Length: 104
Length: 236
Image (cartoon, rainbow over all chains, first blue to last red; front, side, top):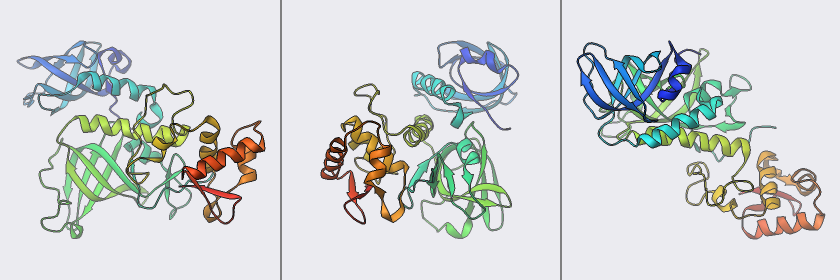
């Protein structure tokens, strides 16, 4: 069905080329219209931000379109504060992929 | 197998995908998720849109697995009550509680409560809890082949809080667990499940002495009880 935005990490992005996903990350660096981020599985991804993107926190969740294995076109950002357990996030990402009947 | 009846007003954590796929025997029937009746639901999701209408507010909820409207009737919102949706803005995560309704073929949650999620880990917790309850209902309580000491978090809401039934099940023997599972999966209504059915269905190749010993032990522990007579049982 429509309106599905699977939670992914960098390793799983290749399976979602062109699709809209959710990526929970730690922001490493903001430079102009892009953000360099660390994904829950420790990978690095470049996120192309929308013009007035309000990326204020250390940890954020992006909804965006996967352009290739290391880049995402941002649609929406949600600020998550300064304390998110990325290891736990990764566990949940993998758990959701292991049980597609209720998550996908 | 028919829908197992949870206690009335139990609160089921679920993903929006599960809610959209919930089955309904006919238009006025209860919704079933994993063959279990759903009365009250709780969902953690992101608010995509807020539509304020004359008599209600519609929150478009998206948890990544699908989208669902949450409808809050303004007449239900009393001044100063925490059901009031203050501080909820678009894109924020919320926890909602309410009943699943269908109107004109479209499902929505009639919201009793909506509150902001302060800590992102609650989003992760909810997904994990929804799966835990799904697995409990579809595979039965853990134990048997499960990793020792690895106690899955059971739904405290559904079992009436405190030590949940599944926690109590952890140290039952495999036969006792099979009997509990069998009774839970075969709701006999007020009558309970007949002992002969248990002996046939719970676990193959058991002697009647083993079965009756296991039933006695379960009775003693308060896991099951007699219903209409000493040959019919129901789980607590």
